Image (cartoon, rainbow, N blue to C red; front, side, top):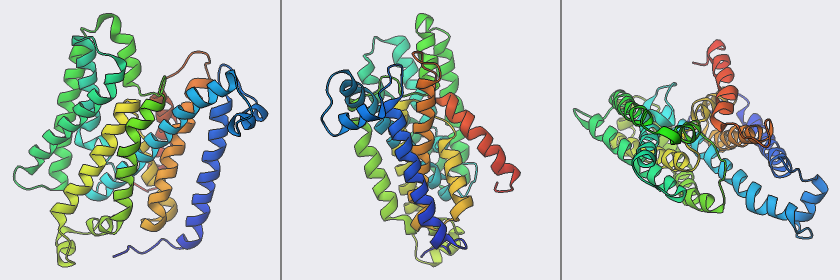
Length: 333
């Protein structure tokens, strides 16, 4: 079953997708060229076609390209995770962190850093473990008395509050590590390389592919449960499945970039405003828009105060906050 497309979606959809692709390509060119040591567009072209070596090639291939790709995967995953959570819970304020996965990942990273000597290469795996455990606890609590969107949201709020409180308590004893931990908790892609791309790639591609393949069931979950069951949908099974996919996508992004806010909340609303809920164009659009928000924010984070670097989460909030306020004022929410 497909939801009815928004008026003119057949014309607006391809146009919006093309515009987002162009914007992403422009952001990619700027991200590869700009920085504390700039690379000219001519040198960038020579690096990409293999005729330029030396420092420009190292900057592009080893530092900036993997960082851009990591940001692209993080943004696409957060955008789709937000779309899934808002659809499954039928809550316009739902975000990827509603299951407690963001707070759980952040908490376990803080605990590990404060209590143990942990190599930075282990932090993504620790974050993923923390997010998975928090989401599992949310599922267990929500299942008590029947798994419903409301119980899921309430359980997620409780788990998030508990994990946040524990993280704050451990931060009080973090000593010299406090500044580093606060920077990580603001979200960022500083120092991310090919190993991080390899870490998030299977999770992001697998989750995005599953959502695309079974997107028609998302339309059924937008309906009242009784109506969806009458149409033959196994509501509880599909709701748990989609929430599980959203949790996996979110845990992978937090493990790589830390807790990045607003992307999973704002991107679905903007796409829904422009295209409606027609899955043919909405899912690709929310992927591209999420990727654009994160990569553009990361570009600003590392260039505005170069050679110093600002937190990525600050820019996603600066971009996403005003957009969210505008959405509220235009009666979208």
